[in-house]
Amino acid sequence: MTFNKVLDDVKTYEAGKPIELVVREYGVKPEDIIKLASNENPYGTSPKVVKKLKDVAKSAFVYPDDSMYELKEALAAKFKVDEANVIIGAGSDQVIEFCVHAKCDSNSKILMAKTTFAMYEIYGKQTGATILKTPSDEHNLDEFREIYKSQGADIIFLCLPNNPLGECLDAKNVYEFLDEVDENTLVVLDGAYQEFASYKDGAKAISPSDVIVKYPNVIYLGTFSKAYALGGMRVGYGIAQNDIIKNLYKLRPPFNITTPTLAGAIEALKDEEFVNDCIVKNFEQMKRYEQYADSKGFTYIPSYTNFITIYLDGYISKEVAQNLLERGVIVRDMTGYGFNAIRITIGTQEQNSKVFKILDLVL
Ligand SMILES: *Cc1c(COP(=O)(O)O)cnc(C)c1O
Image (cartoon, rainbow, N blue to C red; front, side, top):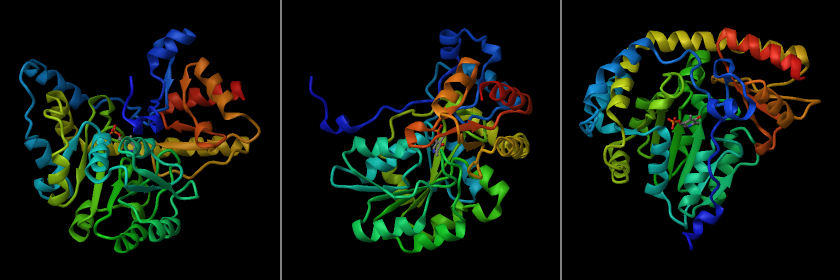
């Protein structure tokens, strides 16, 4: 059978390994597995959200509220924008997909950093668009400017902070860059880890409401999968001027967000105390990884997220990751990105202590 030609060039997304697989392949007991490969919140689902999910189970037989009114209202209030400025997706991934399909075809160009979130390229290639990447792995706005000036772009992705490296541009520099971008270029500001970055350093904090008032061509994306601890529920959002939102809506499948997901997200927004507490602990625990790396003579990328990328000089990161996996610790090997490094999600105090012990053993 022949398929759409563009698919020849599309790679399948590789998720972090699930716990079930490590149990099956290496015989590690499920309770001994430490999953630090997908940047989930290690502190678990907030108890208030768990209660809410149980409450809505009895409504599972009716279709969800497709207007998503309550969640949109809650997000609009949180970000001080209008509901007409909000779109909800099955993960912010789905909003990225809408953005790409709303702007691109095989004549389009998409500009991004060399080493950034894999889905930008995957969705881009689904449309046959050309992917332009900066020479530097980390975001370098001068390189973005140079490529944009010489080749143009239909979409520019800025990941703030950047997954999988952890670095983050200053908001001031991002705004200066936005001033130079043509109104027909859609700029996607991916704020999947903004809660972490803005806590660590106010200079990194992007204000979605300021951005969309000033720039009709910019969309800000957020997710409930990371700080809000709802990765399994699949929910994220985009905030932009209504002209963008209206067009993205044309691509939305009906009932893309389930009833428990809507209820869980609304409840999670009410429990800011839980989220803040997780963020504080995240950076306390990240210090331990920095100290561990220092003690081994490893360098790392200072991180504004809930993960840290550590270079394993003197070792082969792929082997280290595999050895950790066999002992029940799931991390992400960065060989595929051209880095001899591993990316580790910052776990709980107890998880991290075990990781250091097992790392000592493996190294
Ligand atoms: C996790 C992540 C997302 C989206 O996650 P969803 O679970 O689809 O909401 C988007 N961008 C980056 C950079 C991420 O790391």
